[in-house]
Image (cartoon, rainbow, N blue to C red; front, side):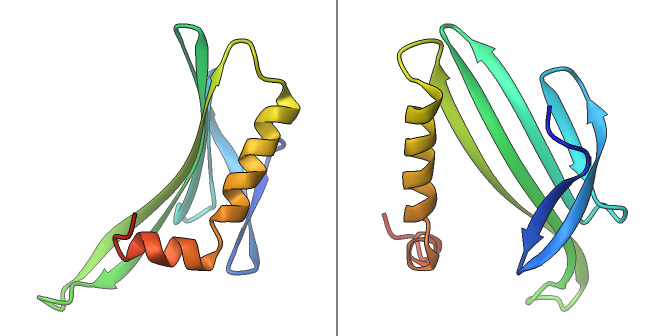
Length: 116
């Protein structure tokens, strides 16, 4: 089980997210004003487990067409689709590390510009 709270560093600022829900295979964490929500889940399927860590951030932003302030949410998540056998924890970690290193600023910027 993850520690409670989990700490999420956003723009070099640590945010403590307290566990507010635990459903056995899924836990939800949030900060006091619920502008940051973390979700960690495990979904068993035939011969594998889909493991997800998701962070959602909510803020108020002006709609550029109407200038009306609205609540908007950005979600970013990481999914590992792991077979029940054949890969060690170290091998999974190596692939995770490779993807995290690939997602440097330039790669993320290219993806947000619809490149593939």
